[in-house]
Length: 312
Length: 278
Image (cartoon, rainbow over all chains, first blue to last red; front, side, top):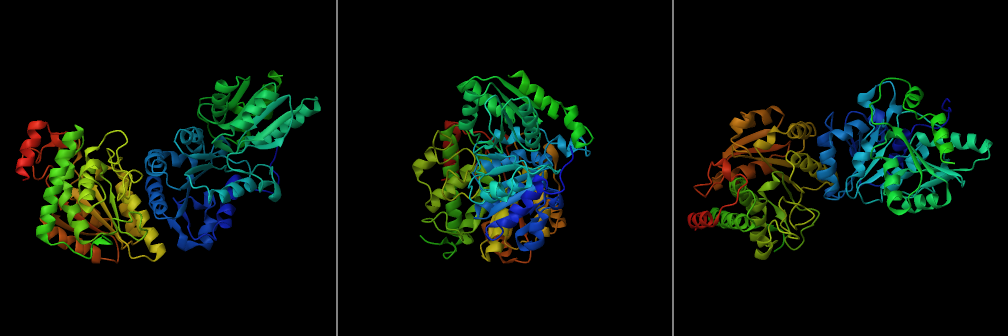
């Protein structure tokens, strides 16, 4: 399917979210030569005095952010998701361990990034940052929800990592519905009792398409936008396990350590449930179109639909 | 004590006596813990005593005073040096020092801002402190504050690429409130720097990154005090002091001895060390 002309990529939402919190003088934006890509450039245009360019040097950027946070600033540092990983230990030891209020945004997450090829397609970022104590991990599904969650980070008072996507996908929220989102609370986009799909990022709109297809066959499907991977909304996940025949998790990320792992880990110890985990199956991507790559990775609508039917 | 030290500008005799007392605490602390890093603590302590005794604007009764000068100890394994000095300044008790490296102690193995009043940075992983200090400096500039940030790194630490990212960034941003001290003790964990991976002329290299640099004998208290005053007064860009030091300085059998980078003295060695430091 083609993306609609309205709406934007989740990375656009990061850019507008920063502008919505720019009124707070504590907000400082850090860039590592990719502000035009992560969309922090809009903040730079309007607030150059609170935008710090640090060049192609991500390790330094993370600790500069930590130093700013230690002095009461609220830094938002962004680069490609894959390049945040280069500074993993800096984030672990320099930001999270001293509990500094630094918000990291990794754009161009997942194989959906496309033609740049596997070096640019982070498929392990969510897993990495989930392992760090006290770290909030977000992966919203469209521009409006990303903007809203970015605004909420202003008062979050914990280090965070937000993954955004490069490419436009259909909007699943409007201005009003996006305001009801809360960090840590999964968003129920569709309610049904036969099967549940828990998805994040660019896979959420695919899940909605699958729900339409199943509905035509009289199968009612719950679709969750699990924009917060950590802390996981375990209450919601447990509720789905109790009332549905099974759960399908879908993510543009390795099946190891991401959303599916988080859901399975919770349910296996509380309420063993039949689960299908769809994601990138322990392999690297390659160059190609976004839709072609999802198909290659068995993450197409037909794959999600088949997984749902197997659980009925 | 309020805005301690800077208003008093301790004299050389007092500074040297304090440094000796800190050296005693360092070897005692490491001996009691049975682990720790005496060598790099003893090489750094004269510089730190000089810094806190003549430059640092801090409040012992208000450790989180927002407008305090920051000291970023990037070579966080030299924690005994930090704790000994924080004890002399009144932040830590002797009982705190006795708990060094034990469960629940405010004296963690590597310095940690979440555990210890008076510590501004959580260190332990080399190469990160100068970047953090740059963040503190940029924040001070945004706040219109005249507070300074002083960062200490080791010479082996300059093998970390992040140090050079930070040097480049500080120069580009022309932070006149950032001051770097390099503890050039020529020894790292495994052996002499010259054997592990020689750095060469650190002062020239830092200078080539756009910093002003002065080299001193890091155990000559007058030279230390003078260089700190010079660095403090240089406000058009970042300034660095490369201090040539002796690892293990003050304890003869630890001096210039790579084996005391991260080894505690035994009972006999402690007695000999304290005798030399009496």
